[in-house]
Amino acid sequence: MNIIELVLDEENNEIGIEAISVVENPAIEEDFIALSNDIIELKEADKEKKLLVGALLIPNKPIYRRSGDDEYYVFFSKDTVLKASQMYLMNGNQSKATLEHAHDINGLTLVESWIVEDDVHDKSRKYGMNVPVGTWMGAVKVNNDEVWNNFVKTGKVKGFSIEGYFADKMERPKEPIKEEVEAEELLSKIKNILINE
Image 1 (cartoon, helix red, strand yellow):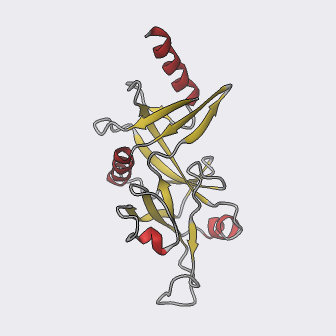
Image 2 (cartoon, rainbow, N blue to C red):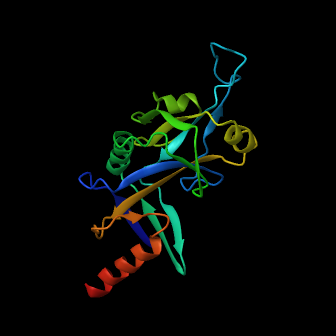
Image 3 (cartoon, rainbow, N blue to C red):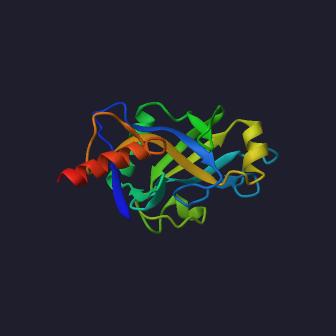
């Protein structure tokens, strides 16, 4: 089965991560933690914090994709994860969110963003998350009662999934590739390259 590295071109403003989606089954297979007043001591103990903390992108983790009959894996290097995290914030996308990649939702904002730099002394360890060095972690504030009550508290969403445009390392197309939606087109381009070599 093919394994394709997805990359970012910092000079192309049309590629990068556009939104963070809250989903039931995150592709990176890491759930977030919904923080409330019984997990972290708050100044106002009678209010929930309504904060989701979790991995946004994990380096070198194979992510299974299927397009028609074609099956393959994609992955992101540590360098690409770092670039993606920086470009997401530089492009001002921290309040762009979707539910299950299908519905735009308001009231979710990335309020903390960091790259795991140490196996032992990292904030992710405080939350019991054992993710590799180079992982992009985030805390998303949920100021949307419908999403919090109907999806987070009920466990209908369990983690984050990114939405964005990437190129693959085998061919850097002039047109951006949307990883989830245009995977079939990407595989077709890759097959053409392999056949013509």
